[in-house]
Amino acid sequence: MPVLAITGASTGIGAATAYQAVEAGWQVVLGARSEDRLRDLAEELGGEAFALPVRCDVTDWDDQREFVRAAIEAYGQLDAMFANAGFGAKRGFLEESVEHWKSMIDTNIYGCALSIRAALPHFRERGTGHFLLTSSVAGRVNLPGSLYSATKHAVTAMGRSLRAEVADSGIRVTLIEPGAVDTPFFENTPDTALVADDVAHAVMFALSQPPTVEINEILVRPVRQPT
Image 1 (cartoon, rainbow, N blue to C red):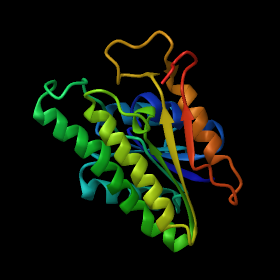
Image 2: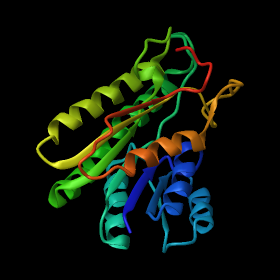
Image 3: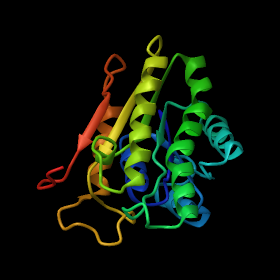
Image 4: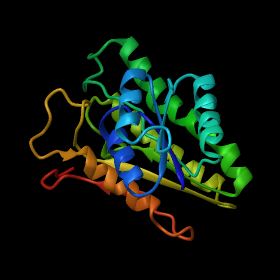
């Protein structure tokens, strides 16, 4: 069975992807800081034969290395890394605390980079693997007063840079770029928002391609979201 590691797996897009991946015949390694929720989710997915919960703060390098090590020890390999952990902030450069800003930047950018660094040696050794990075529509357009948008521009750039670095191998890189999604990200969810399963379908589409095909970017907006 192929093995998929997911950060930010305890809720939202990460959890929805875990359900769909197990249904499609994958084993999943679930990473997040919420240990209780991870254990519950792993049980719901059928236990450790199918899902391994591993506490992982994506901003901690030791946690990231342990996350990948645990995946390989439990299942013998790692086929795909979904760097999905992230959160947002209110728009406006006079909004939020500077501490919130720092935590968001560390999680959305540094955390994504650490996920890449942790999995890349294993992928290089095997000559194959698949990185999926959660960016956003906000990583393609400039949103007024949005530092969150700037972090997702960074993830988009990171994915493109990574793709260029591994172009000499069978390693694939896919940017997942959702519009508004009905997840805990929003305090007031837009009426027309996607649901987490919609984005998980996009992830599984990228993962289901033959090894000679690389889906570089999937931009998925809800109907009636103009930008």
